[in-house]
Image 1 (tube, rainbow, N blue to C red):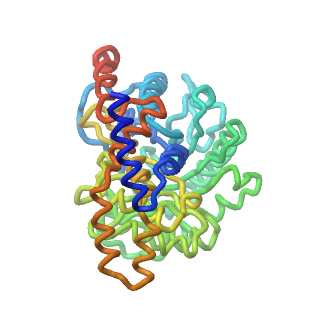
Image 2: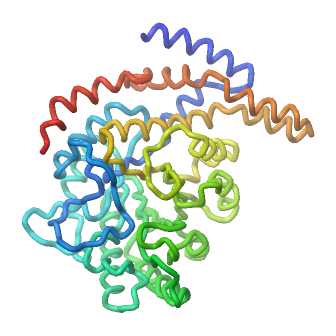
Image 3: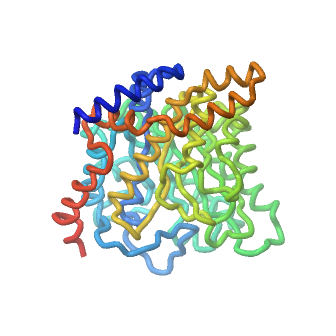
Amino acid sequence: MASKITAAYRLARSTYAAYGVDTEAAIKQALSIPVSLHCWQADDVRGLETPKDGLAGGGIMATGGYPGRARNGDEMRADLDLVLQLLPGKSRLNLHAFYAETGKKVVDRDELEPEHFARWLSWAKSRRVGLDFNPTYFAHEKANSGYTLSHEDKAIRRFWINHAKACRHIAQHFAQELGKPCVHNHWIPDGAKDAPADRFGPRARLIESYDAIFADKSVNRKLCVDAVEGKLFGLGSEEYVVGSQEFYSNYALSRDLVLCLDLGHYHPTESVADKVSTHLQFHKKLLLHTSRPIRWDSDHVVILDDAVRNLFLEIARGDAWDRVFVALDFFDASINRIAAYVIGARATRQAILCGLLDPSAKIQAAEAAGRGHERLALMEQTRALPWGAVWDELCERDGVAPASLWLKDVARYERAVTSKRS
């Protein structure tokens, strides 16, 4: 197989060279860009807290019942170990706060400390991966109303403010221990199923809450990189979302925070790729969540569709790689969860590679010269260029199985491990 890949790659390298593209440089850069894996795919977004009855989903729901989900932190980390073995390039791990491991001790979210994530940190150190972090503003009795940081009850707002403050210190601790900044992303489920009478109040309270959170100067913002994430709608917030895209775009810009763009958080006809060149005129950096909506924010497994491919093509054409953070955000309980990780992460890195292989200089030169027909022809021709051979070479060089050969490893692990989980 290796000799065939090498032969195919030689032809691909020659083909791309005719368009002015250096495939060697593209492979090297594509491998160097970190992609943050989301821990919540492993266990269907259940978390590791002591189960509580009567808790609302808060806009989070994984559908399906494929056997073998991880039931505890050890199983999650074992699954992630296999995932890392099957992925080329640099990876990180994105943790949510309700994956704290507190033993038999009940620790509420406003009292979380770095020690409650010691096993995750030890795992990250041994695997040499960075950690990202998220406060968990859902699946809690103080989120059952559908409101958290924008709640009209000051005591409930204070609880969630304290939770976020605790999480920022945990994120800073991760960064200090691992020597890499920790992206700390805030997403809240706040909103209404039907038309509210007051749209102003919750948004004013949300600003007040966030300002209280970020007023903590003991957190080094170069270590804890705060991001905020909006969306169009969610379960239980179909009509009104407090933290809309417009809200967060303005808030992030005015407070020097990172704005998060999630591929699944917009109207189906909106292009997130088109938003990149707009936001990066004003924002210093963006956090990009790759996901796949099907008619709604359903967080399907990422595939190499036009949306994700165009997103990274836009990054490449603007040479904005150093201005974006890349993370996965989907959860599918209807298929093998490890395979879902690998498919989604590989599709994301494939899109990154395709962006780097784009003959942007040649296309942009044609446009600048007024040769619109040439620009369009070149854009169409790039779709047929042999990027797959370059991808296989990338995998070989990083010591992972190319094509679909990794499915054998997933099948073996399923027979030996996940199929035995009740």
